[in-house]
Length: 349
Image 1 (spheres, rainbow, N blue to C red):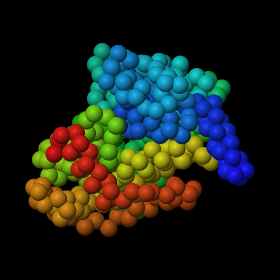
Image 2: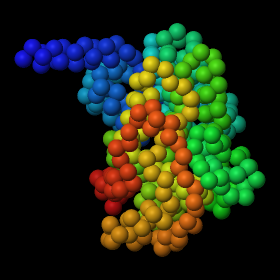
Image 3: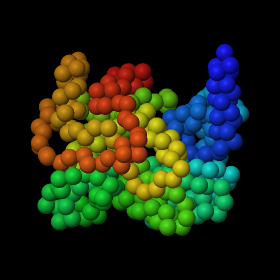
Image 4: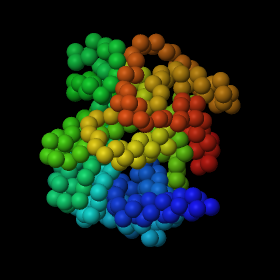
C-alpha cells in the first residue's frame, strides 16, 4: 500500500512538473498540430497553440474540446504571412514545435511566394525563441520531400535514403506541378534555415516526416490520408501527388499520425538532442499500396496503372531516431487500414 501511494505521489509530481512546462505548437488546428496538442494536454503539459483565425469557431471549438484544455491550453492568433505574430505564443515556453506551413500562397502580403513566407517564418520564430530566454529546444515538422536520394544530375537515385540526402533543386518528373515544386523548395530551405539556429546556441531538431496517414480529430479527412486512398478513389490531383512523391524519392516513406506525434514528444525527452532526423516506419512503392487495398478491400476499384512497380532498389537507411531509442508502433497495414476507417468515419467511403 505504501508503495502504491508513493507511486501515485510520483505521478502527481510528474504531472505538476509538466503543467509548469509550457510548450508552443504552431498550426495547432491542422492534422498533425491538433493531434500533437491533444497528446501534450493528455500528458499534462501547458500548451500555447497558434491558429490563423481565432474567429474560426470550428477550429477553436475542436481544440477547446480536448481534456485539460480549459486549464492548460492558451490560443494565439498568428499567421505564417505575418510571422511577428508568433512571438507572443513563444514567450515563456521551453519547447517550440513549429508545425505550421502554408500549402497555398496568399496574395497581398510582403512575400512573393510561399517559399519566401515559409523560410522567413522560420527565421522570425527562431529569433523569437532566442529572444525569449526560456526556449530550450526548437522542433520543426519537416518533410521527406527535402531528402530525396536523387542524384544531382537527375540520372537516377543513390542506393540509400538517409539524413545526408538533400533534394536537388533542379529536379523534375512527369508529375511535377509548380505548387508541388514550391512545396519541396519551401520545406527544404526552411529546414536548412532551421538547422542554422543550432549554431546560435538553440537546440534544434528537424523531423522529416513521411506521408502521414491514420485517423484524425478533424471533422474531415486530411489531404495526406486522402492521398493514400487516391489509388482507388480516382481523385486525380491526389493521385498525382502520390506519384510525384514516388518519382521524387524513388519510393514512398510513410508514417502513422500516432508515430509522428510520439516522435515529436520523444524529441523533448533527451537531455540534449540536435540535428536532422527522418521519420517513417515503412518505405514502399505505390504498387504495394495499391496491391494491399486490392487484396484487402476488394469492394474498391484500384487503379490498375498504380500496380506497375518500377522495382527500385533504394533502401531506407535512416536509423538516427531508432538509435536514440524511438520505436515505431505502426506499419504499412495499420496506416492503410486507418486511412480507410478515417474516410468511412467522415462519410467519404
